[in-house]
Length: 314
Image (cartoon, rainbow, N blue to C red; front, side, top):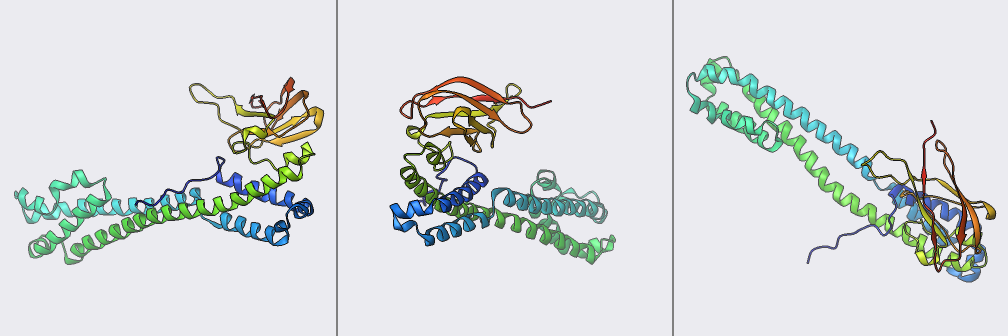
């Protein structure tokens, strides 16, 4: 049986969910007495274990860092490939001098394979090994043509350097797969604590719409049946590019002085708020505010959707 693929339990970006967990934990500590009154398992050891889970998730190497390291290893491979190409081209005149008008001998030293191999690290490595083996086999003739033994040895050195660079790159690719899996496991464990806290927090704050709001999951992950007002905030885009969601836009229900921010997908949401007609303001530094008036909210049984598109300030 094949191993099961481990996927993220949340829909927002990794850096966002880590910061969300930190913020939620800070809010939880302020309300901890109310949690403990409901369930003693939320006592101080709980917040300690939560911080450890956050630290573990944050200490995992992120995808961007791994990609940067892979780029460095790839660049090292390119350097070695270029040195191999140079060594091959430097050797050609001596080989032709040692074996004039003998194309079959040239091909025995890799000439016929070079063009197809010059841009492929594995094939180029094979060609360099062929050339070195042939150069050793015909060392006497090559040395007589002034292709010295150190120059022959240098072909092996270049091949080995390319092999080592290639091996380091391939090993890191395999390590990346394991590191990504471990990162997802750690992030999921941290997120599971968040969902547990939010589930209890909604019960603890059932009589406070402002308090309830503090225990909503990121809007992209929260259940729709607990939301009264939802939407997505995007920025203007040049067709045919789709409008991208904007993170950290402040969304304010002005009559209630109640606010939230968009998640990494540009989504936002408010939990149960009193039924009524409201003004919703969307604001973010660098963009003109968008204000939607006469937004009628009836309750979480039928959440109203209010989207907004922000225009950058000139």
